[in-house]
Length: 66
Image (cartoon, rainbow, N blue to C red; front, side, top):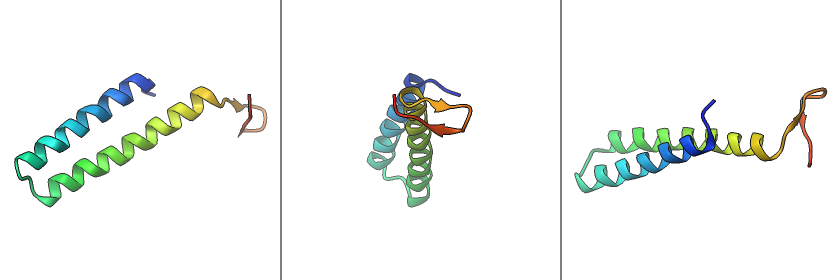
């Protein structure tokens, strides 16, 4: 699993890449590929943040409030 900081850096990199693609007039396929990568990374970041701040009760496999 990647750390929250690594995921945040990867997202910032993809956002910069997306801006560069737009400035270069990249096609829809390239922009869509970039968007899908961003969506996947955002999902992984969300899960990492949840895991970090809302631990799982390993006995029952559900999230517990701290």
